[in-house]
Amino acid sequence: MRDILGAKVQKGEHKQINISIGYLANGLELTIPLHVYRGQEDGPTLLMTSLAHGDATTGFEIIRQTVQQLDLNKLKGTVLAMPCLNPIAFEWDSRNTPIDMQNMNRAFPGKADGWLTDRLAAAVSPVCDYADALLDWHGGGYGSAINYVLYDYVEGELGERVKEMAFNYGLEILYNGKPAGPSYQYEGSLVKYMLGLGKPGIIPEVGTGMGLKIDIIESSVRGNFNTMKWMGMIEGKPILPKKQYLIKHRPLLRPSNGGMFYPICGPEYLNKWVKKGTVIAQVRNVRTMEVIEEIIAPCEKTVFMNMRGLMTKVHPGDYAYILGDLSTAEVHEND
Image: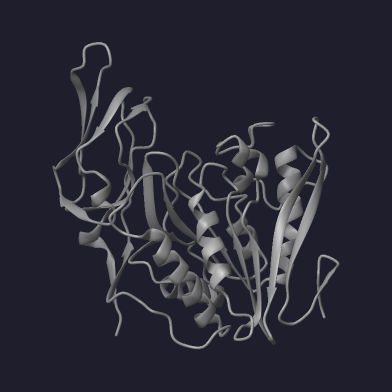
């Protein structure tokens, strides 16, 4: 028997644990689901999480497909799956928890007597004690697409493990520099908390709210099994691309003007590159219908890591693109 949060799980068993947060104002109990998949043999434990941000839904499907394909008879160790960390944010399709407008991925390890978001984080954090490594999905939302691995730069042996984990996940594009967001730090993230425990964790920034020419769900499901292979949980070697690119320069582009956003480089350009100076999008004023802003590719080889790929409304300062410069990337070649 293995004890997970007081629940007994036998070898070869799948068990769902519902972690209680408390009762909402409407009288319904708020719980966070934890699925435990224990293999027939002992071994490492991998934790997979998604939907800390309620609008980043692709990670849920990646986890669902992964556990559907798990063969517990061949698994050495345990997979812990938490497909919906923030049910309230998911219900409202909101990045932040609507009740207190806090960002769950800046709240870890949380506070059991804090705001609701703090309490959600405090309920999730103890699960990290059972895990040896963490995959935490983020990204996506209507009209956008994102596909790369984000990992923290960490010194020493742990840093080497994190880098190995990131590259063995198997996506072509990786980044380990400063955040693109307004805080310019990852403090309070679930991965940062895991690293503080001395354990490796990475963020597959994988998500889409539109049709794509590449199957980013399939490549991330493969990435999950690559991670299990790397950890020694299943047989085989990770399936890797011929080349992987560690981006060193990652510009974040936001329009200075609001209006209607028109991508010139659409969804087919995700993880592709264009030359510096290419017009990649326009913003039109909804009163005059005239183009009031053009967004220009800033790098010698501008690769699209995150993109707004549909005609959508934009406000000044909204996310448009997270880009990378392939010309200055660190190239890793695989056999």
